[in-house]
Image 1 (tube, each protein chain N blue to C red):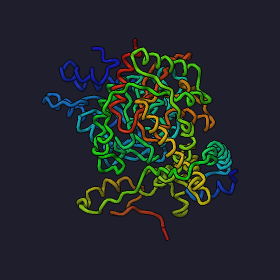
Image 2 (cartoon, one colour):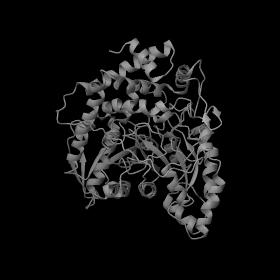
Image 3 (spheres, rainbow over the protein chains, first blue to last red):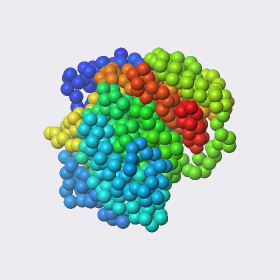
Image 4 (cartoon, chains in turn yellow, green):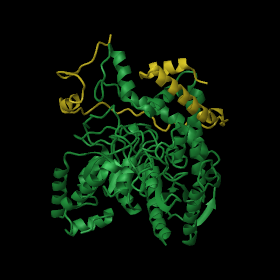
Length: 93
Length: 473
């Protein structure tokens, strides 16, 4: 049902590195799991049953900002690489 | 003074009457952790600020300002944030992450002067049913160390059973409080979704997660729930008091529904069903009406969960990329860094679920799997709502078997099946409690699970306490 190409693609999409051996194991596991959940894909559901989508997006107005620098050090202390008040990263573009 | 097997209620009296100091009580649990943790591995690490917490709590008691949980020692599942302390979700990815803020539940517990002792072990990123997937090694069941404590709040459950704390907090997404509580002989409670703020709980399945207490008694679970379930504007899914009040029940529970067809599912042990019937007999003898009910699609809760949850996980875990915090592996360029960080930082179950989630959300598959699963979710929720028109409580066993042996559930699907009876309450958002009952032929704890309508949490405590009393008889 699921192919090795699809596993490669899923790993690329989710940015997860895996060895060939790990990908073979993942292929078997996902095959197994997809086989199990297929019963949900196969079931007939009346069209008036809407998807639950239990969590909806809520926008909070961007007002009453915190005092500058209140959390800066606390947050930046956790960063693997820091440059002043910046999180340091490799070249993006 | 014998401080073994206290409850929160008993400890409150001892502390307030000054028979015991906060220091003595905390030291009792620290000594137990010291003595037993090498074997049990319930506690991943102790917090560095216990002494300060003890002083604050003792001052509150001395000034006659003690509240319900002042001086009461507890453990936090490793995915709940306590500012300034490590919170790692028992993963390599976050092994050195220091929480930069308090979760809402910890804010409330700090306000009470409760004593946070440290981090309870769990399956990595709350994925599993046995705590075998922890980066720190598995927790052992205190009743039999060759058996799992359940998961993912295995450390939290084992700690209560091994008398390492007076209560623990866990998280429950498919049964991760209730199932380990059941396996370890503790009470485990999952509130109505939206009752307890998820602010500061590392998100796994945002529409399914809930924080809840593991305790020795139902009354204790109620005490903790009252403290942690205050409304929190920092969690947009946290229900307002108006919404909760709209559902307050006007009568005490009297009728218990049993979904017979569901109980006849594959893999449910005979001894579990026998123990369950004893629970029903006790209720009948005490004057409760037991009614058979039909929930035609409830058995689909588990496969529905294994579509929806991985989808939400693939989104929620994408933030762990080694850039702003956590484990970070530098590759030849940014993309390579992501790939190596995630490849090495995530364990096997986390990886499986992220890939599964990516699959069910991808073009060409999304409607067939994810949208359909959300529709079936509506169906199941409607059926439960309908059933609750004729009954006050729905009863099932908590788990289909007793605590299994380590390594027994190597196949992912076999592991998933452990959550058969607990997962519906997460799919629908209903509150549910697991209460210890008898013992299995392996002499392991068994338990019964009760569910109530949304926001009828109070009724679960009333009913649960009654059940505890009558089952003992």
